[in-house]
Amino acid sequence: MSDAIGILTSGGDAPGMNAALRAMTKLAASRGVPVIGVENGFTGLLEGRLRPLTHTGPSGELGVDGQVDLLGAVGGTILGSAREPRFMTAQGRAPAVEVLAGLRGLVVVGGNGSLSGAHALAEASGTPVVGVPASIDHDVGCTGTSIGVDTALNTIVSSCDRICDTARAHHRAFVVEVMGRDCGYLAMAAAAAMGAEAVLFREQGRDEAQLVEAVETAIRRAFSERGKRRVLILKSEGVRTPCTRLVRLVAERLGDLRDVDVRATVLGHLVRGGAPSFRDRMVAGRLGIAAVDAVLEGRTDTMVAWAPLVPGGTPTSDPQVFAFPLADVLEHSRALIDGSSPITRRRVAMMSAIEGVLGL
Ligand code: F6P
Image 1: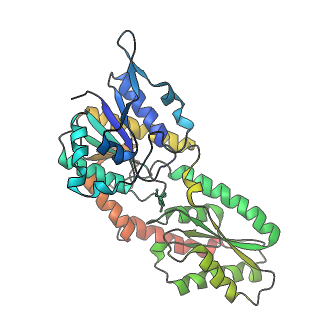
Image 2: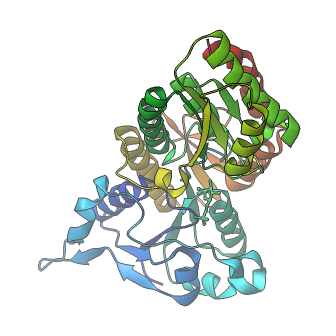
Image 3: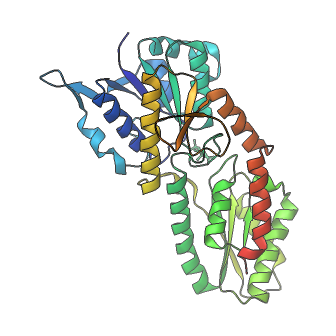
């Protein structure tokens, strides 16, 4: 068995994954523990695609690969990422369990799919496996934030500022779609920050007719009653009606309002890239440090969480970071997504309470 810790990044990349990698590699090296990067997420683990991120110097001391030092400001993930279907079954995961047996421990940085993979690996192996939440969607249970959420929101807000500049110039309404397959948090938080006229997200449970009506009402109020020059509507990707269809259906009902032009913009992957914000670098660094500590203490099947919104968790040496069993994290994630979590219910209630206020 090697005494190295393996690190992999998996699922949708998130700004700050590299900052976590930098922190973990430096901390482990400072403790005399070598670090191995696993390329392309669980795919690389299955195929044994490993690359050292530390090296031994002439006098035996551990050094950090030169590239690692540059990583704080770099978006994406230098290790590469993947969504690996073979990881869905125990048989498919078996080669990864063998590779894992050659490591001192593994840190998995990613969202719910990746953390499910980490949980399955931990159950199948005696080697410590620790998760670090990273996903722009903010749909990971037990953690107050995940690496990437803050940068994604900053990107959405600055993109919407630009869209609003041109919208005001032309007296237009824009429906802006943002990522969030299972969770509308990005749309909700950005709508609040932008003072948007309306926000549409899956958890509201609106059918297509209700969506069209909500957008039409917001546009009529803003232009006819309030004399606004722009209308901004945030739509989450999880709302199945495509942006372009929604805009067409709304435009058909606004025939009586001359000079009103409704447009659609899908921000898509733009929101997932870019240099991480200060907050994402800071959160990534501190979660990374807690994850390496957890591996070195021999803890497994656990995730380090930032300022958790749920009670419990095991304290770490960082007052803002707590560790939760991965099984609990995945259960909380499911509840966040299916709407049974009190956190989701509070978010929906809060958005419905402020929607009318934001558009004033
Ligand atoms: O990382 C999560 C996420 O950004 C979701 O919001 C989105 O639906 C998905 O990834 C897109 O993933 P991909 O780039 O694999 O299509």
